Image 1 (cartoon, one colour):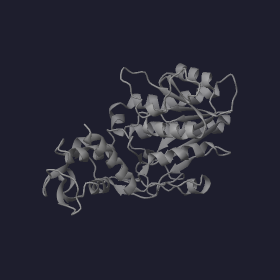
Image 2: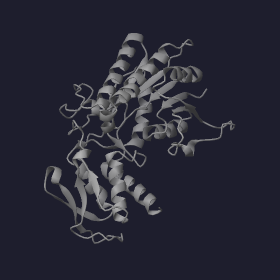
Image 3: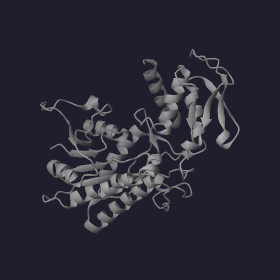
Image 4: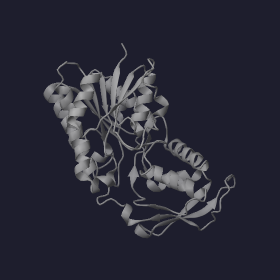
Amino acid sequence: MKKIALITGITGQDGSYLAEYLIKKGYKVHGIIRRSSIVKTDRIDHLYEEPWKKSRKLFLHYGDLTDGSNIFYVINKILPDEIYNLAAQSHVMTSFEQPEYTANVNAIGTLRILEAVRSLKKKKKIKIYQASTSELFGAAKKPQNEKTRFYPKSPYATSKLFAYWISKNYRESYGMFISNGILFNHESERRGETFVTRKITIGLSKIVLGKQKRLYLGNLNALRDWGYAKDYAEMQHKILQQKKPDDFVIATGKQYSVKNFIEEALKYFSINIKWKYKGLKEIGVVKSFDKKNKFKFKLKPGDKIIEVKKSYFRPNEVDDLLGDAKKAKKILKWTSKTNFKKLVFKMVDSDFKLLSKK
């Protein structure tokens, strides 16, 4: 029989890539989506088939991690072999504005899933993958691995820390198969538009197309370990195929700043940038254009295209994250396939082509 997987957060970046991966593996994939007057299934529309088709492999259910009875109903109805809990209020800045909601979804929402599985009348060994985050490390010294002490610096990170520890607690207390994947930053063309990487690729594309004059950002010096989200879908599946549950740091082991991301993105347009001033007064201006430039734009050397704004800084900044994924490489036989340059190119290329049509 085909394995059955349940994915929370299936309409998000990670959920959509994982759904694709599992369907190719022969799974029947069920996903939980929130009911809304605005349809937000564009990332998985290509996988969807009409309900009456016997061949369909994707099944969607309305639900929400804030509704425990609904979560129990869906899990009890499906009785999946594997659950991938990817749903979250995942925007760090928003977590400072909505800390209670963030905790309700990320922390208590995870607990609701664990309790639902533990309380099932039809006993079945369901494997659970809990999506965790490098934000757990916060101010911890780099590189960060499975043994590094956590130091969360936001309501988002703190809520995810509860989810991490309650997952370990249920694993040890009740013998449940629950594994945490501590993922460092992973981006793609499907990343939400309010996240800094997409904000950069969209903003620069609009500037080149003459649809926007300037891109406003916060901490340009923040250092991150950026991977490609599509590569990480394979890893999430691998974690649940192990004989015993365990926790893994997933990262590329290489680090780049927000400035580095901007500079690499501008290479797509054959633009070189010059940074001027420091701190909140820092700006990025066009320095020059490569001779092979094929783009027609009105930009000229000296034009200010990047500006720092205090409002985009977090109340409590995380400056330095770098993952050590030696354990994942050894046990899961997994390494990231897409390097930083290819990642940035994919994202800029996708956004520029999309915006060029509008």
